[in-house]
Image 1 (cartoon, rainbow, N blue to C red):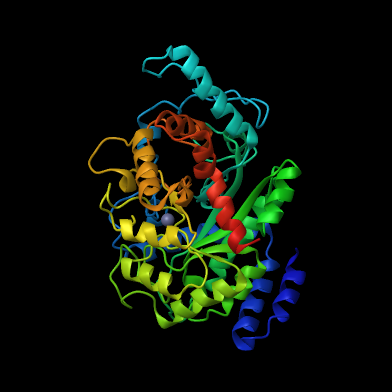
Image 2: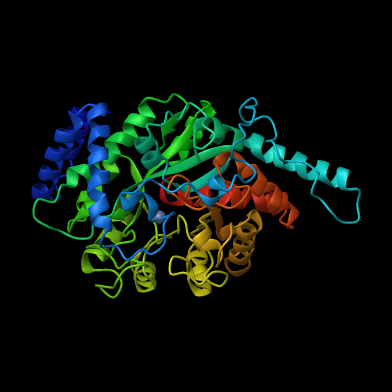
Length: 446
Ligand SMILES: [Zn+2]
């Protein structure tokens, strides 16, 4: 859809004429800018974000903080330590057909002959990968690609996500997040910069034949059937709304289907998990925004919300909510993780929790996390909320410090293998790695 038709679609939404016409103007302004200009604008955003982030109390780098620091994105510990999976450039098999490197029989112990049991696990991994139904609920691929001028069609050893890796890993739906982190209204607030991220998302999708933006679950199935990977536009931190939930219509018209009201900086909608509280949870605007997301059919993401904001979202939302990238607080007491009662609250309503790979959310202390740490969080969430509540939200591309052996999307099948070896059935793993997330997506965006 070109800029003219987008502006036209805005005109049809007349509920908030003043706000929308301003936004429409911004859209036209941004829309007539070429993709090249959008990239230029993004670079400006980053330098500007460096100033914004100076007030952020987000303590540790990487994951949710690194790229906003205005510093070079820190390579993950995995990359810098030369752990397995980096420095090597795996051979690309026929997409969706071959088992990935590293999947096999060499690490299996126990009574049965290791080779035969390993063959069985390897066959299941290969089968699941070939189905091409894995889902990643959160990756900052767009930010990373823009910053590094990364062509997603080309496989780079250091890139956490590119199309060859998505294919090789059996990913059949992925959520690319853009971010609108600004804390609050101020004169001259340049909202168009945040819209430029959406323009850039559109540009990336339009210039890569292997991916296509999915607007619904049925759309995702069609895209898969055409041999492409469906990508959902999502947003973490809805500062772009300012104080006007009516802007959600604009985002919806752009194809935005998943939104977290707040990122690491408390904004006009909600208190952040890692910032000072201002509202004691959701603000009045935040409550209206959640209801508007329900009305439009936008997935409400509780990751990054403070605990009080989480419970306000649970109380307010008329639809199931999800956590795009959060882990179990019981295993790692971190404000970005979910306590057991939070896990149960999401699960009871039919939502899902995307287990994230960022070390800070996986374990305490120094040293890299491992795939077993990821498995432990999956197991805990499954034990508390049921297998049907568990999903994956890698946080790739956001400067996350990644587990050894899970440094990029191409290694995802190694997690599948570890889950099978830890005792999950093939059916469970199919659900955890994609089925549950797809079910939730279909609930909100059929
Ligand atoms: Zn995040």
